[in-house]
Length: 154
Length: 196
Figure 1 (cartoon, helix red, strand yellow):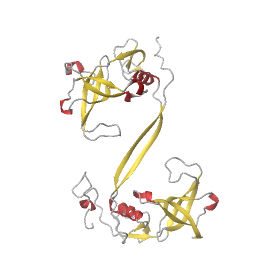
Figure 2 (cartoon, helix red, strand yellow):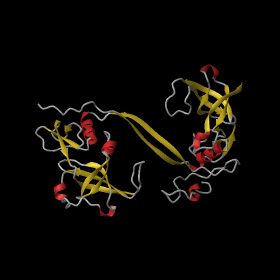
Figure 3 (cartoon, chains in turn orange, green):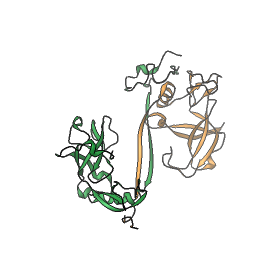
Figure 4 (cartoon, rainbow over the protein chains, first blue to last red):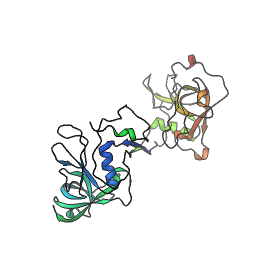
């Protein structure tokens, strides 16, 4: 039986497939992003009176649309965390950091974000953190660069 | 519901899906801020980086392109020439064993007019993206047809590839920058049957 023609060395190359999706935000996330550009944090009050941050569009229990946005603090308390020692491409920080659930002052829920710390020994549940803002206003969530450790204990 | 959809004021919105706006979400009460213009849309890039290997048969095809040749392949006992070959004849179910140069002259088997360009290398719209059957091949290649107004492109039209300069060629399908019409009579739909 005849052989297939010789291909020589089989080719190999990097292939990048990407697209800049344009997403409309809707009123709730739009207001949240607008506030970030103003260096403020907003949550939203659910039908049970709790403040949810980051804000959600519908009540987690009843599914009712929510409309009452409230300003919360730019400092908060670490509720849970883990250490990212090997940083993958596309993460908010290029250096090892903590990935944490952070409850901002005035909010009743926690948000997932990163804490810029030199070593895991610096981070603890209950530690106080504050927002580090982007030096210049950017698109959407990018205004919130990360959290950094603050003094005190929550 | 609140005082209505926020999208009515969004002059920047070029696509409106529904009369009431995309959502029935009510307007929200926001504590006073710095009066920054309301964010209505954001850009969210999504990218995947692959380590791509085309395999043996497409490697032969891509090495041919580097030499300015369009190489197809045929299985033993078969008549159809597949381009680019995946290393087998999908009808006979046998490995391809013979390399066959096809084209460069070719025929448009079907096409569409592109009004929204996509990617950095897309020509200015409107332009024609086509399936192009190289002479001697059983299947068509994708290609862009330039050098003719899009309203004049038709099925059966004869074209030829326009290549990059030899010095700029790599093992890439982009060596063929586009296809352009040639002065030959159209091929009838009857002759194109089975090659769409």
